[in-house]
Image 1 (cartoon, helix red, strand yellow):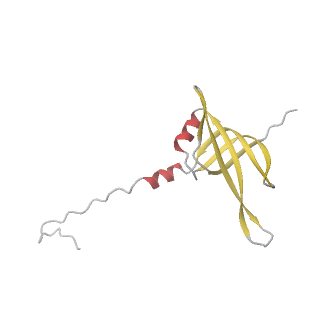
Image 2 (cartoon, rainbow, N blue to C red):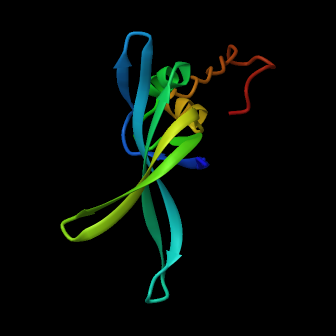
Image 3 (cartoon, rainbow, N blue to C red):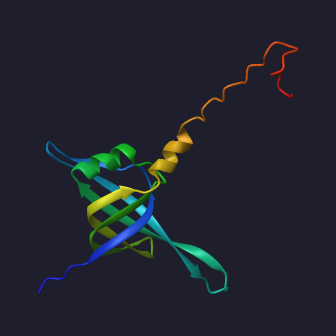
Length: 136
């Protein structure tokens, strides 16, 4: 009997998503990471990073390509498989996720940070000696 491994993950993009596919079948390929707080052998807490690769198709892929930037917080849900490797004597593991949905969570905050603050109107002082003269 086949098994299904599904997940929902929130993490940060390593880099901007890349467009994949051609014609009507286009998608986005992206890499992101999650962090865990772990206690080391010395008793100090540190961060452990886990790498993930994701693929999504359709309109959500277009939105992700348009709005995704390095460091953007992203939430995705889909099915996954774990892959393991060894390079230069060090073992590693990560997940490949076939996303059914993906959303950038901090887009509004980024948009607000990029927009300059609106210019404040300067008060116009009335002619000297008038009753409506400002107190400054």
